[in-house]
Length: 37
Image (cartoon, rainbow, N blue to C red; front, side, top):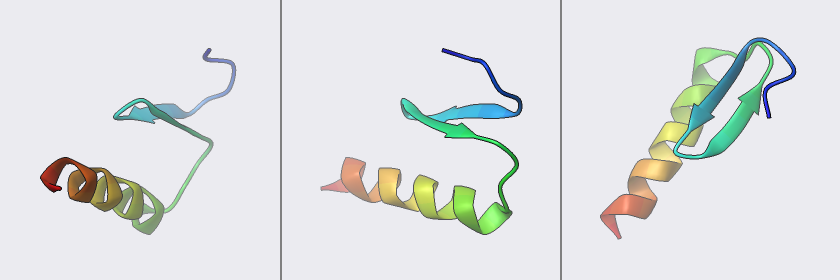
């Protein structure tokens, strides 16, 4: 469901609202680590 902008999806995880780069980096790094296990 997409009701707010900006809204992003990172590997199925919804991120709503304006976020700093570090927030996105943390989520992306966590997702990459899950894939490497």
